[in-house]
Image 1 (cartoon, rainbow, N blue to C red):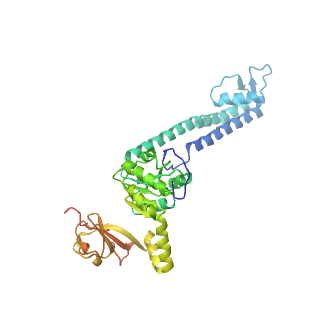
Image 2: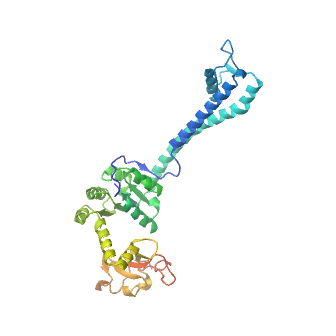
Image 3: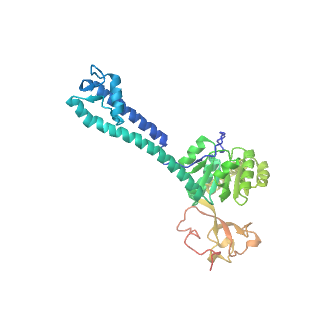
Length: 363
């Protein structure tokens, strides 16, 4: 489902990022340790077999099989008493070596069982709590290059990773999403059950970045059926498919191949212009494009007179370019699309980040 992962699969299984190793890995390690204790104790008894007596054998001799038998009944605390230490050395070995090994053996077995059960219970509890608390979240369908970049941009703009759910059937994508601390629902995003498990019906936004445009269309249709109100952003490879994806229910459609091609053309035609465009699309340093509220002190002013470089004004849910006569003077409730420093500088303050009153705040 990722733009660079096309591995098929469908399970609809929710997987939360695990902070520790799998309980089954810990189980295997503990079993190996228990076997090691058994083997060590058998060798210990067999080497000192002259210090033991077998009440059921006329010769009272202890064989290798007797050593294995004695070890298992002793470490498991069954202790039938038919084989017993008779020499002082064997009794001391039992007291100071085999008894601690018996305790360690029991702790391993009981602890392993409790650990596996507790880990499974914790995982079920985490999944149930996640589903209960997940609301107004963001679902990212496809965790390839575009999906990861979209999540990085959301997180860098203040969205918590706990509010992001990835839907992808690819094993590599799942591992990468878990490494980034994201919850993953495995499966095909064109299936309703998979999207329900991701909480699409309660999601605030859905970002679709699949490897194929036809998959994007099906995923968009399914998402829109489950949640008529969510905001859907979809990426397509071909410009010809933009109208089809919009008709399927997407609110915004990004043409990846055309966008990359235009950037390549700009960089080739004008390296300086290409550098500025790359700066605008890169988060963290230099310039950034952002949307912010209009401040009370900015009401009635022209867009060109503000500290930020205003490039568009959003009024009544419609976008106007800064030179449009409709927005010659800014009014209460306007939203501004601006180009500003990615990090505030002493000579370039960022309005809206110093607890100023927004123009649409209640008086």
